[in-house]
Image (cartoon, rainbow, N blue to C red; front, side, top):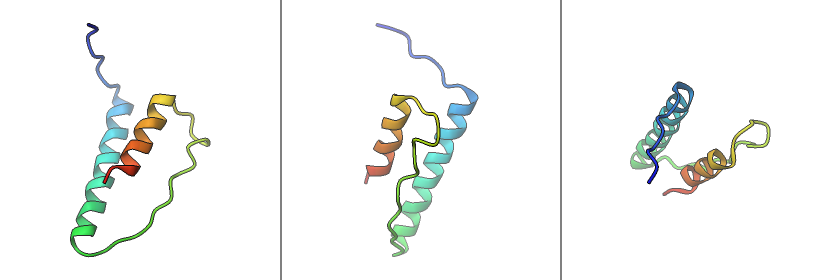
Length: 62
């Protein structure tokens, strides 16, 4: 079994922004505000395949 690696500072900041955004949207839904959001163009940003999967997972998590 391999030891999990720690996140880099940039990864931590990205994760925080994702969680912050998800929590904000959840708060708005609780207040009755719903909107449709499109996915950002992930091709413009150089992401690893794992990061793309994580972005999509967060987007579709409900």
